[in-house]
Image (cartoon, rainbow, N blue to C red; front, top):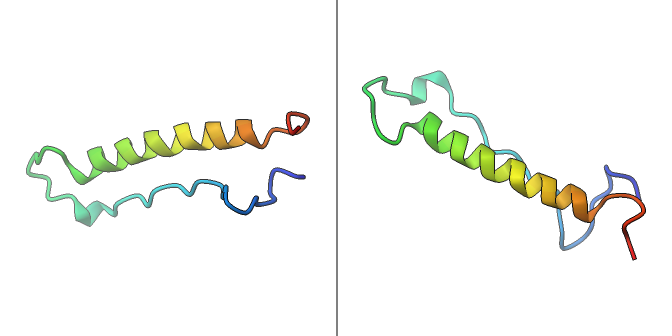
Length: 61
């Protein structure tokens, strides 16, 4: 199986959509939409590493 193939029931995680600059009000909100995006991006990267580990060639049993 190549890394580009999808496994039914275990799809590759999809990255979060980056907010557009006009979605931020620039008033110092906490959390800012960009803070929420960064949190989602961190979760995505962690999920992607785990997914890649599960689908690494040679580790399938």
